[in-house]
Length: 241
Image (cartoon, rainbow, N blue to C red; front, side, top):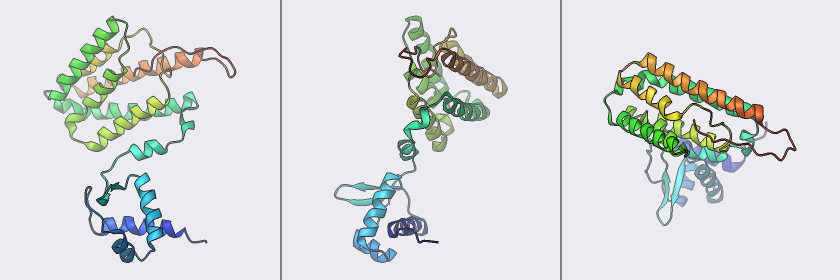
């Protein structure tokens, strides 16, 4: 079996160094010369390793200050996703299933925060959705913020980042992945808020499932009317979820 490239070995040693020294986000790494000697690699190999780890979001370079351990983020993962991810409706369906499973499951935890400020903000956002929809205006920004706010009170940064990642993936699929449909979004979202205000996790989960059933139905509507390959027709609709 052939050995991995030298820079990959340097990359592995650097990650091990960060773990062994229990370095935290924001901690500064030693200067390049000292770090290369510590890891037993050349400075050239170390530079290649640090460049690749910056791309992966493990470390960050601060101009004039050196290298620092980065905070965990899904952003580098999103940026590395292949653009072909959005080529088929099946991909959208897979993402939708994963997102639904997560958000429905989180209702049990969100229901414990029935009096939190985040839920009050969600209610305000849902009411703004109603105003925009009454005026015939789209509200994807309000929709996104609603779903982000819904779980902020949990204080779980991983949950926040995963929800943000799902929205980024939806954006990659384009604004025409979901048909507008006859059902307005404001009542759907308000129903979720009201169930959570009651502290009724089971009802909130049911309302969230109904929300995703509606998204799924509107996705199917787009697929049924989508032009075949080579067709110059345009698909209508808006990606509200």
